[in-house]
Image (cartoon, rainbow, N blue to C red; front, side):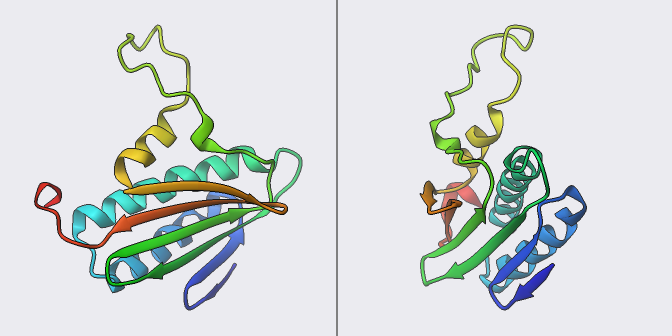
Length: 144
């Protein structure tokens, strides 16, 4: 695991989830996010990170890098891996109207991320999957 001021790089392993959590907590506190926004960010990043650990590297272990930046209005995270190319934003919307027995397994994670984060974008940059999460720093009445 390596961490510089605004980047955390680690092995894509569930063993590293606590380090991811600590990194996000530290950066979110520095950004002055509300408790609710911190929780939303933690949950969204955890969902993305766990999916990378489970699916991005089917034959071996790989790395994940999380880049943090902020400006006056937003906190932005770029989550980058060299795993199998996968755009989670192309996943079909989950069928929330059906009963649990009728629903297919999976698909709720990216749906949840999109509900918690103001803007979610994907790009394939050479050999990297890059998922960008942008969360508004401003206090919104419905949020607090």
